Image (cartoon, rainbow, N blue to C red; front, side, top):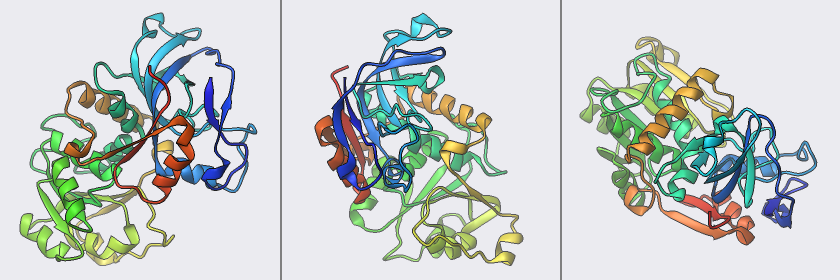
Length: 338
């Protein structure tokens, strides 16, 4: 099989396309013929990490979609031939999705049904992260489905990003009122296309005033991409028992919070890294995201506020460079015709 491999960490040039034997699934594993591999920021950050791949080599990318080709001992044979989406394929394993085939534990291959492989390869990291951000708060439900967030207000800081887009789509499915912040008119169009009820351009508008105009009592959840830059704003817009869920670092490495303004409403700051989520929370996220996909309520593409950028397997380095450079939308690598 053809696979993108790196044997040392560094910039995108360390990625090489190599011929590798098709692996055999072990106990509890499935072999998936990958059709589309999704690229996330953590993929290039892992590739740039200072230490070499633990096993001497690594196929990158956590997310993907394809068809189950074979199953290992203990896995239901009925899964063979199923169209699936994959999550955390490369987490503490060498078998990422940037290859014609990959191996994953069976629970990390989730039935996709008739939905597109593009959608399937876009679900894992962004949607599971968004699910945790939306459900971590004490006043928020721990499951997401139609009507689960009726009457709640959600602020998505950075509504044009992949996680921001996922949070908007999931929160709207759950009937929350969604307010998204963006940095300009083009990104405002993307957030609106994703389903945001209100879009605020933080470079031109007063975010606190606009949020308080929309919801005088504040918001129940904040999905936060830039915690240091937005800490003061978040502290002024949280409702009682609200949660600010931080899933990214805006480069500062430190955060200062005003104690009294957050103490009075019993506000919570929750840090979110999808890979190390509590198992119960992750299981709920996988189930709910799969259900949303099955119901056809999740979308990708410009009409969903998430432009798609396709690269062939031979151009995996360019795909990684695009994500590292801040490409708006979802970068996908076409790995086979599964």
